[in-house]
Amino acid sequence: MATKEKAGGKAGAKGGAKGGGKPAGAAKGGAKGAGKGGKAGAGGRQAADFTKREHAGAGLPVAAPRLKTHYEQVVRGALAKQFGFANPHEVPTLSKIVLNCGVGEAVKQPKLLDVVVEELALITGQKPVRRKAKKSISNFGLREGQDIGASVTLRGARMWEFLDRFVTVACPRIRDFRGLGTKSFDGRGNYTLGIKEQMIFPEINYDMVEQIHGMDLTFVTTATKDAHAFALLHQLGMPFRGDEKPVTPRVAQPGAAA
Image (cartoon, rainbow, N blue to C red; front, side, top):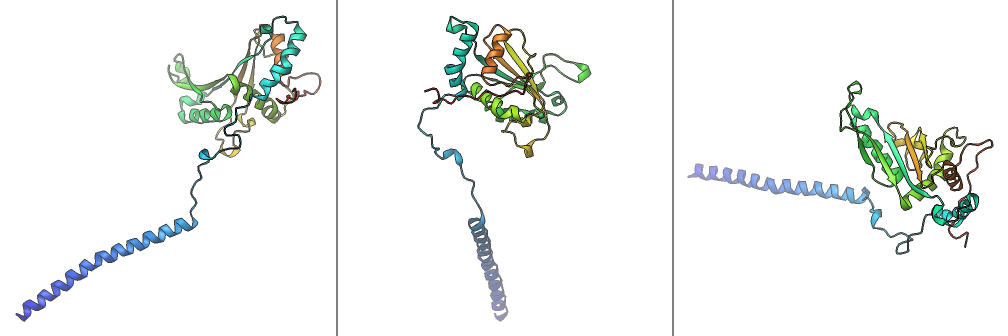
């Protein structure tokens, strides 16, 4: 009987020790969790959601682009007087701006095109469209339907705002800038120029640039002659190359004419 009682006591002690070990482990885990939570609460910082904050202009009507206001108040009258337009609908205006970027290396490295698309979206504020190859070229390893570039077409307010930023901010940042060429008109009132570096735009961060690439900009106008388109773009502030140092005309503020 004594032997059985001793065996039962040992078994009960072992069971009690095992049963008590689990709560101790749970308490230990709770202490660790509390310690981690305390550290996170003391030194950790939560990311602020800036999209939910109200800005100073919340609830106010959206102001028209200042370059569009300058065109309506100053440029239209100057062009009508210069070329003798009797009908106000004959005065040329800016129709759209097309940004096109071809990435030939995207055939072998598709990730390069993703970077170009992100940069175009930052520059224009609009989602670019991926352009595909129209036919296969075996010498270049190109197949029909492959993504080889991206383009953006700007109209309306975004078009005027982009032109304003390009004239006042981006052009002066071009390396060794001496003015834009005047021989890039196509004979039907459209002007095209090439950019060698995308870093001239202030939206691009130097530290995030993986590869330098260029792009083509096409300014489409309603003019039928190159002389009319040249006068329009010059009045809008395009710094064309000339005999003297190009001077960018000052853009009138919306309330200046009033």
